[in-house]
Image (tube, rainbow, N blue to C red; front, side, top):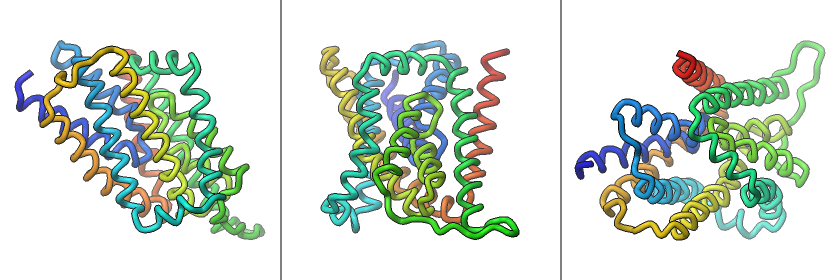
Length: 278
């Protein structure tokens, strides 16, 4: 691959990662589909060594997006024992599954675009359900009383959101989408559902990057598998696009616009299934 092609691929995947990591449309699903389409269009397989290194730096870029976007209240959150405990409870199910043989079976699904298509349809359903319940609480039907949303993430609510986050191990189920939907279903306010989803995204994204780094070291992958320039370009793109995506996500949830992303996921999921069936 020429140097220019390496830069274009790194920047393209960085932009895709930055958008799909935070907008509720599944970064893992889109990266899997993008690679499948690229393989079919070019007739080549993506270099696994370079791809692994690129995945790591893309995770670093998107992790930086969260830290930058919440830099003003991150310290207050980190020193709040109750909030940190809630983050730990929500993260625990993901850690347990990631450290079991089940993780390998889940990763094998990433090579199957049809699975991604089905999971994108599931993401669409979760988004619609979460928005419906949030709207119904704030604007109930005639004869019903409005239910106040909570800004406090209790341990039971954290456990529910953690279970939703575990679903995101499946390619095509959005981590941000499933956790925000879980928060809204559990009675959290729109703002807190987004905030908590991004806060538990810190250990989730960091953990995913560390696991990938471990696999790179175990496989003896050379750090020269992909030049430093494309790696830096991919990480920088993921960071900048991620910051913009977080801002858009917060506005979309606040204005009850999750159905936009649900429609998109449904369209891509359906198109993927048609592609695979034909």
